[in-house]
Amino acid sequence: MARIAASPETQEPSPAAPASSAAAGALAPHERQAFLTALSRLSEHEEAFTESLYARFFALRPDAAELFGEYSISEREEMVRETFRCLLAWLEGEPWLDANLRALGRSHAEYGVEDEMYPPFVEALIESARSVTDAVPEESLDASTLALLRGAAEQIVSTMRAAGGG
Ligand code: HEM
Image 1: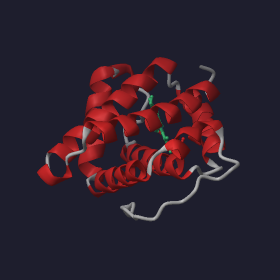
Image 2: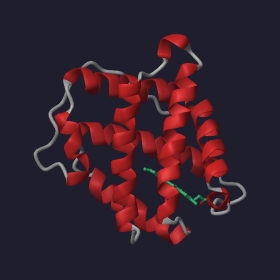
Image 3: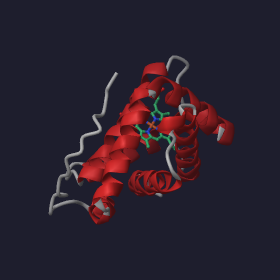
């Protein structure tokens, strides 16, 4: 299982950072640290997080469940790991993020993913982040950290969505 270390190190975003990662550069050091800690906690609870995310997402958009193959467990797990990887890349201002998201947006449009599915996906992601961390009292994420996660996730899916034709 991929683990994301909650490193206290900070890194300047690349000057060539694309528009989708621009906002991360404006984060204060304590916000960057809170974001990293949140990702680290979520990746430690990857299994529960994945289960919660798909249950919530498919409850909001039952038609999205139909897009997944019958034996798509590994694809679903890969999707969650890729989401974590993109959130971290967003924070670090990685220059490859934009092209990666555009390619994902195009492949997802081919899977039949509709523009309107992206907001409920973000909703399910944030609610899962909240519930999985609330289950361990000292890991609970505060509202401002959840808001940071939401902002980053919204930027990620908006790049995918735009590339998919939305
Ligand atoms: C509206 C939200 C989304 C829907 C409905 C969706 C749907 C799907 C579907 C149907 C598959 C193929 C599964 C199969 O082969 O059975 C898939 C694969 C995948 N998804 Fe998503 N997805 C969404 C959001 C995301 C996001 C936000 C990311 C990452 C940032 C992501 C990353 C991936 C990856 C890495 C795969 C594996 C195959 C590939 O690379 O295309 N997905 N997704």
